Amino acid sequence: GQNIDQPTEMTATEGAIVQINCTYQTSGFNGLFWYQQHAGEAPTFLSYNVLDGLEEKGRFSSFLSRSKGYSYLLLKELQMKDSASYLCAAMDSNYQLIWGAGTKLIIKP
Amino acid sequence: GAVVSQHPSWVICKSGTSVKIECRSLDFQATTMFWYRQFPKQSLMLMATSNEGSKATYEQGVEKDKFLINHASLTLSTLTVTSAHPEDSSFYICSARSSGREGLNEQFFGPGTRLTVL
Image 1: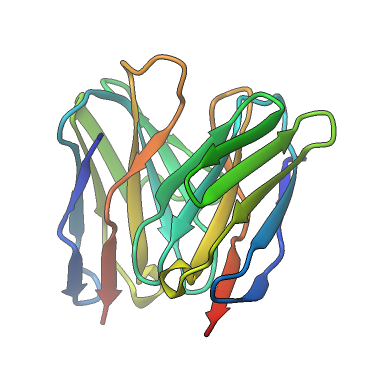
Image 2: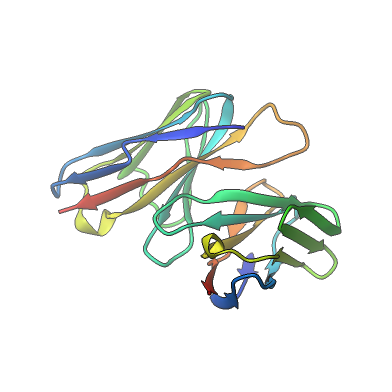
C-alpha cells in the first residue's frame, strides 16, 4: 500500500533550526512535495524534490533520498509566523499526491 | 504565479439543501483539478480528480451521486454537495494542476471553502 509517515507535532524555539522528517512508500514516484498550512487556510507550496539531494530556498531547505524513501524539510532562523502544519506529499506513478497527516510545528519565544 | 480561486469562502446552509462550490484557475489552464476535504486537525483527503471534458474519478468511499463534480472548461470546476447533512460540514479545498508548465507537477491550491450544515 501507499503510505506517508511524519511526526504529529514538533516544538522549537524562535531563532533555532528544526528538521521535519518524512518517509514514504508509493506505487512509483514522481516527486516529493512539502506544503505549509496555517490553521483555517489552504496549503501553500514550499518545495518539490524529484532528484536526490538538497534544495535550498531561503530559510527553508528540502532533502530527498529516493533509495531510502526519505525526505526532510529544514527550517532555519525560525520565526513565530512559521508556526503551522507542514504537509509532506509524494506523487505516485499516476501523478496523484499521497498526503501525510501533517506535522504541527509550534514555535516558542 | 498561478492563482486558484474558490467561491464561496464560507457557506452556512440548512440540512437537506444543496451547495455549489466553484474552483477557478485564474491565470493558467488546468486540465486536471482535485477536490479535497479536510476535517479539523486532520490531513487533506482527496475526494475526486476532475479532468476537463470527462467524468470525475472518485476515491473509494466518496459518493459520486452526493458530491457532483463538473469540469466544463479548462479554468472552472464545480463541486455540488447535494442534500447536505451536518456530517458534510468540513473545509473543502480544490487544487489545479497546470497543463503548460514544464518539469513541474505542482498543484496550486484554492483558498478553501468552509461549509457548515445546520
